[in-house]
Image (tube, rainbow, N blue to C red; front, top):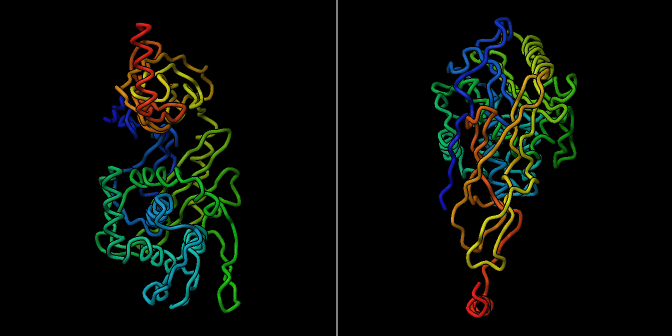
Length: 379
């Protein structure tokens, strides 16, 4: 089945809207995007290649969450801590070599305290080795069309040829947030890591906005001498989520201050208009050789559009295109697409369609009976 993925307005629109010259004035690079549409609302040198420091761990967490989703690991998986992981410097949760801890504890350590030892341990259990995991990181970056990113390690300590951009970080963050469970950890301000010897390591979130800015529930800070102070942040209020990235800030206070200014601007200036909810029934599609003849069409995910907060909700029309489908087919599989048109009749979006219910293949005897009835009744 061919998936049609034509986006008239693509994943990050090339026509960026510059809001004001004084936002992120101290940062080397910055970006503000809306989560569901991916639209860029502000940018400053967003495609400049810079050292990301521990924001690298967004990719480390993303690959870990994907491994869990694929059933390769679980939060309760036991992870052996290698000498290589335990000896990592910088931010740590102080893992002991040749011990075993739960995967969830490592995710907690990376998400809250930006633990380099935990990041290496995750890379080894997910990739088999740190080297193989780095290959996975770069393959994932390529698949996400992160064109100005190259990883050399899973933790973000400075190394030659280890770089990304604010633009690419926003793409990566958006992908991680799709795994909503991660926000449970990135939004935690403080917790404890209970070690096997009975001691405890206090974990305090390096992202202070989690505590001091309502709605912030992630995502990842970073600091090295080369990268300076960095922050990929996300916040959600009133059913709208924004992502900000600041790179190369001179101090942690300015990093938080300028992130706050971008988020304040976003929440005070924009709203989300739901064009089609994913529960809305959009008609039917014929299913060949199914236990039912027709299935109800729905969108795979809510279709939204970001608008200025003072504007009236715009009106949209749509055009449905479906493929020829033969059972079995499950909810979530792509069966066609829907074109969204503005009031001038211009196509502004094209999104995937699926069905509301699973359709099983009809068995031979029921198919025979069905064909017999058609023959007798002529329909």
